[in-house]
Figure: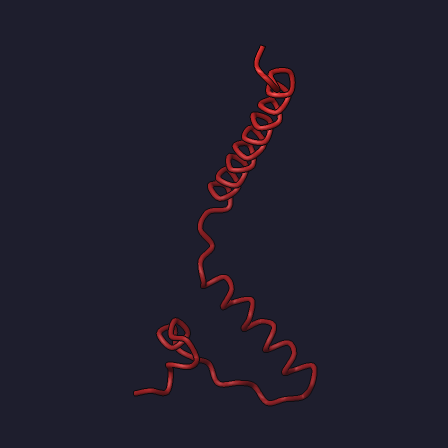
Length: 82
């Protein structure tokens, strides 16, 4: 009988359970992605616009100028380099 045979089976059961949990987690993530679909940067942009409009109105600031779709896809640090 080799040294550690009794503990080796228990250790492998823990490893197998961990791999099973990771697999199930990945399956849930993929299923949720398929259900919701690709959200993309347009969703984040729309949320940010709504928040800024609401806060500007709430604190009495003037409305901010609207950027074009192309400008929104360019990082702010690179927008005025033309």
